[in-house]
Image (cartoon, rainbow, N blue to C red):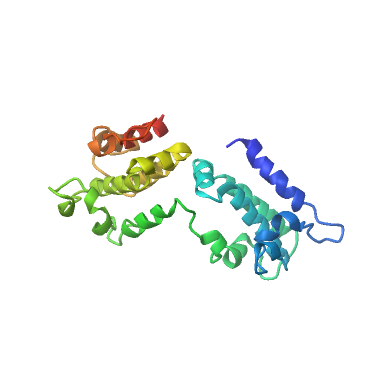
Length: 264
């Protein structure tokens, strides 16, 4: 991400919520930009921040919305640029430390009260919900036994063993991970309409797939597979489910094309 882009958004918020306190020791909170993010009121045009913490939270929400407020922004900025969130946390910490706030002594206090159960932070961003689905059927955590918690109902159709979609089986852990990968690709890129929508300016979502693959592979050891490239060579490079051409699209012909583009 260009530093100028990050700084530009912070320059905007500094105009409406300057770093310096007023001579009175109060926050210099200018309503015009940030009021829509205040918690009190019955419409965006009638919002109000009644407390200093409300004001700081409004600034935080404004920053998140500018960088991550829809699936386009989310894909563009979360792809290798998630570190910008550190700037938000630094800004939050700085503003919180300018004054004392009842019951809030640390960032974790602020998080517990204002972020953890706040729907403005927890609402799903359109285009990202498919990951929530796969987490339900192939959770990030291993079972207590140390095995993958692979729920067959969603992913079995993508397993390599069996003679029909209703009779598929994943015999190895790598089969299971590959099934999860193929499910994700199918959900985002499985036909020409989906492919065009997500490959046009949203190819960065493939990075999430690769991160997910890497995470799952690193949870356990797998014979002969020590890196993503090992997995690619064995399971993607000559696998027709990745190499089959998707009709009606331009620029990229297959799932493998998308992966190759992000591997470059």
